[in-house]
Length: 478
Image 1 (cartoon, rainbow, N blue to C red):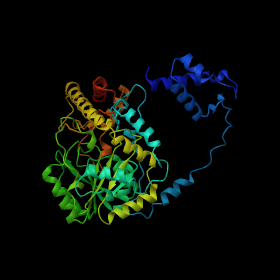
Image 2 (spheres, rainbow, N blue to C red):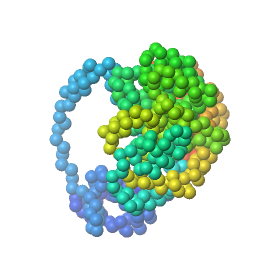
Image 3 (cartoon, rainbow, N blue to C red):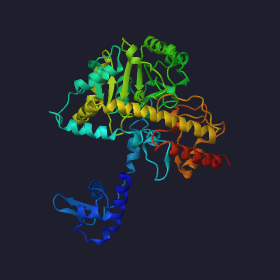
Image 4 (tube, helix red, strand yellow):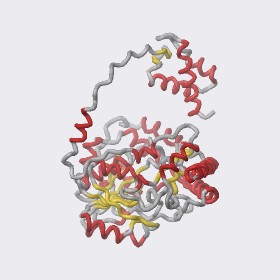
């Protein structure tokens, strides 16, 4: 039995049996539970920890686990209606009212109900994560001298050097700040580069989490369309002239959600247009390590071809490891670096040193290149499985671009298709999908779905998920 399911099942069973014990009564020993349920000691420990977190059990080292005392009835809820006035009045004078909406992000973060196939996930399935390598790295890191002390505010020098080498070009360790995940780095970058009320140019479509960051900061996202070769330079120049924006956020490599790669002839154009506008380009290089094995050589980051400090670069290890391995780099060149550094320190102080030490252990191990090769092959297999299944079972969906990196497809729906109805029908059929609307900062030109092939168990589950999506399609269109 899989460890994760064993923990859940044992927790449920122990929860049902708690009524057998009086408050304060002792539960069977861990050894007795191991023998009775034929599970590992780790499973027992995790199940008891879950019950303790729920307030149902109290554990005492050396004594065992005991049923908790009944909870005291909570006091009546207070009247919080005053907060509606306070929170609304807070933005009354803002040029662009702040809008904190996490719904577009939660679509890919929230786990679907049991039995539902996860085509909406934004992270690798546990079977693809380097769990053993991460555990070994964390164990070794915890024994490093000074591992639990305060790190330098900018990050460990060795880790900053590693990120600088991986980016290349004029980037040096002095220009690297270690941050707690890509979302945190993007938040710092936008706060540093644009004042509240300012426009910020974004690709259309683009990552909903970035749109949420911008709106929460009181910024005004202005869309610039992308095609199969990335952002369109002519429209980018028009947008700079029309808005006076000083920031453009883009994903030049395997763009989310289209999967597009910025064409070679457009790379220099984008930097030139931004430089002439006196603007920064925030480069979100989020899935460079999720390249498929048939992709061929990758283009360098824009930051590697930028000696003038136009690019503020963000890259993260999270997508290639685990959603809990939140280590990334924020890179700048010139005076902007001091502002980025100051905002990060004010917001978060620093990334915990044990996690930075574990990162050094992981990327310096022989397991790291093996892991990258393994996920490169696995993602290609999964992409091909999903592409084949869609063409067989759902030929109505257009697939104009098949990416060679990343973890999802971006099929276009026929005109007149209601994304919301299809998404709801899909969930009823047992498959969670992501609607396209949250990826657009303005009215979308067409209906889309984003279908992830990384968060599922394998090719068989992908095929089954597409079959379920076919049933949902028939229901929604019928």
